[in-house]
Image 1 (cartoon, rainbow, N blue to C red):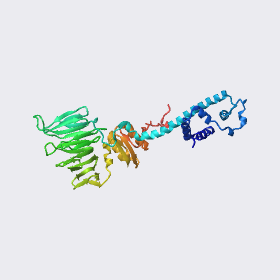
Image 2 (cartoon, helix red, strand yellow):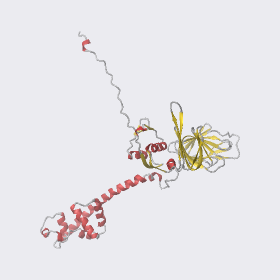
Image 3 (spheres, rainbow, N blue to C red):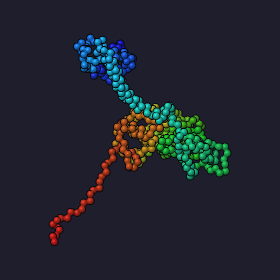
Image 4 (cartoon, one colour):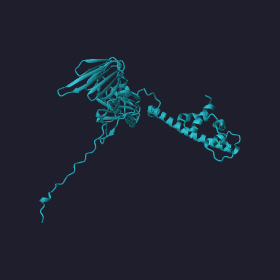
Length: 429
């Protein structure tokens, strides 16, 4: 459509008060195409559509539409035409303000949705969100030989030395390095424990180049192996991402429920309460639960052991799924954790581990799935806002934990009532 015709059409709608917000925005954009004089001429109604009696030169009062129409009549003097042009400019000014407000409102809605999806960029920056979390600024605690060492980015260098081993710390990673000679004061290898706190991860590299990525609130135990300089690992709690390069001797890692060994594999090991999960990312592993036969798992296999306690005995329940999507069990290793259609309880447990939260009264949680995306740097308020957007109410308890059931109102103690003395028992003096 011709811009001039479109402009006149929109101006006419504006005069009649039936213009839509979208048309107001379009009108504002069209106004920018013309100069003030051109806009004034185009905004005048056609003289053929007006009653000639309206344009009496001696008429003292005009309606707004009449005044605008009078500008196209030659009999109108220059003074009145100038005044009409000023009024037209003022109308354009206020129309521009209105259109700007509409644009701001529309943009606000669009940007709100955009930043709701991309909010994690404020915390994670522009780095690839699908890569593993950098551990440079993280910390952990090492317990060895009755001593406690804080592992952080500030402490770099050799922490301890053994008969044929030294512990070297660098930002976010502790490395066990074999050494050729032993000093007189070196002691034999001893059991060590490494643990992480809330919102912390750490890397542990063993002499055989096995790399252990520790999740938040994870504790591992390293024990001397029969081969000098080698270690057996034990996961006491939490999650590990284990990367074992090709080697001749099997690497063994244990939990209180099972033992897993491999010569060349990457896998995730998660231990919580009375259950253990293994997800094989690459290669193959063999895991053995209690006294049962070993189970061979290959890449994209997931196996889980649950200890079910009954009145009479404790029963092992094993469940293995083949060719599964294991990205969900790797989410805690990524810069941006993305969950699609996952059970709400699983999401809360996973993120709760990261923030070090304790949850009580989870029976009030609805049985539903959730979609969420959160950066590892996001503050706790971001996690709570995700729950709020999914209509999940969270209550803060006096004990410092969180609950999903509405707290019970405080019960007032029963009033102590004084004994009632019958008036008949009171003797008159």
